[in-house]
Length: 398
Image (cartoon, rainbow, N blue to C red):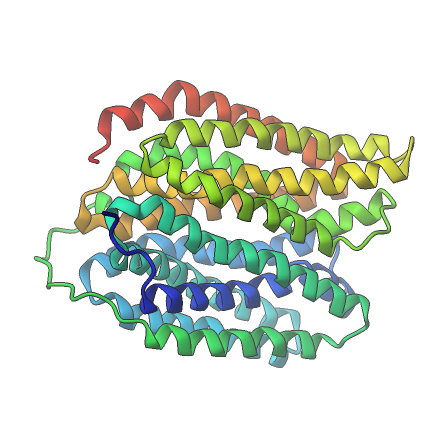
């Protein structure tokens, strides 16, 4: 008989996760326009400013894992969630670019902690036999937020809603999410014996090969989430690019119906490789949209949105599998460190993608940026096949 997965605390933490990421994704496609229109920033500067968030999150990740493995997790989760929420108000008060960057950095630190702690707590409260499935549904909250958030933000921006109003929407969503997080009941965590400080208390050393592969995949992903609206405008696609994120999230939701269950059956590396093949194809096709637009904008539009759906399926297939891969390489007392390493790898790539995408677009075009990203996905696939998969099969603990 299967252990029960859905409990009140599981539902509450999924709701908290959804509202947190809704507030986050609501601003993602809007911030480049905000920086350009309000502060007059160019593409390269926009990439650098936005990446401050990811760099700050990255700096916080290793310490988050150590703190969560050492101290009580829920208080750390609530504290991080509070600061994450408060920074949406900080954006509204930031009257200069310097203050905006400062708020962005603080927001990144909070994000680095709240995501690791939320991900670790949800692993604590679910049965281990259904971990792949449970993480799949937990990740689905992110994907749903990724659908509704950017679409809502772009619709509000296109409807000439004020930036203050958009920031307030993010703030309100996260306040409700903070309440849900407060109501989550976590299992008792016995005090741990303080061990000597060492590198593997901050980074899961056995997870480094998988982290490199994931990093290479997240670079073009970072380019997509931050610049796809500008890319569409550059190649004259007039349809609302909010639907790009909607279809991407639908693809991720569809993938959750089968990927988590396959992971629980032990097909972790096979699931990741299948998702990689699809993602490689999608990024080459996304780059090709820059050429096909001059031939037929109508067919390019259809292709553009089909790519978003397939990208969602590809990444949605890989996410729970990668997360489970990292957790299965770590002992139970290093769950926080495993989750931290997983998310750190992702954040490093996202940050590089923000900077690299803006720089390449400034020097050439977004089309060339996505072509570069496509090449990185091929390298990631080859590296995973030759190095990561054999390494995992040799060192996994469960």
